[in-house]
Image (tube, rainbow, N blue to C red; front, side, top):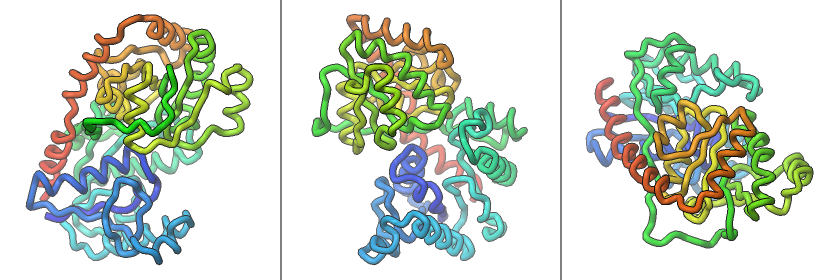
Length: 364
């Protein structure tokens, strides 16, 4: 059995949860089922999770596609379509929602994974929400099976797209963090800091209300805020930090995976203030590093964190501030860390791999 993945998410992300998920499937499914072969259709990759010799993964490819985003995406997209037209695979698993492949795959079945429903539930926060939602709806109705990475997403799919729930299989994303014996401490580690991980600029991420809620706490408790991943702070963010009197307390770190583990491990806590997430993989990353988690009280986070996090109302700045401040002033956090370790064991990546392989086999 041969599974084909296209290039979509890998050209969209150099790093990130979606591309890491697909790279993990492609790498590990053949390990648990020797009869399954996986193939990613790309010419050249900048994605940090892929260690594959693609046709242009060389000096010429780097010169042509290494920095030019338009060519990089176009070349990979066209190559993926060329591979799909060959129909030399058993099943297709697109890595994002462009439906163009439907014209070329013939009768070969396909599976689509839905990671969140943010474009449907919070369309005002994305300029292309309508386009992505339309594409997602099309693929969901035409797919042979749908993987939802949480029960929350399954409910949202049934309600929003009127999908038959029997067509949807929940396969939770598993923990992909393997904690080494020794953690790299090469990143700057501040004496006491709160950690924020990931993208900040989409409105549903709730970053600006979060900053306003913690500004007084940072100053009063002599804490810093470390933001890992995404882009460096923008001019507007620095203006906001200055207005709140916390510019010197806010730091951005472009951390690799080892450095991110170090940031989790040494943080006072990790805070995840999003209005909505389909799953919330950073919560599991924090659990793996024995880092206390404070997060929004929403269905996705409730499903992932269980009773192992401190929850606050993301649309209530006062509740967010009070929850964080109460946590900071609590002397011992051993209980919540222990609960996090227990909760982490409910999401093994091995189960994700085995259940996905089994779903593929069902469509063979």
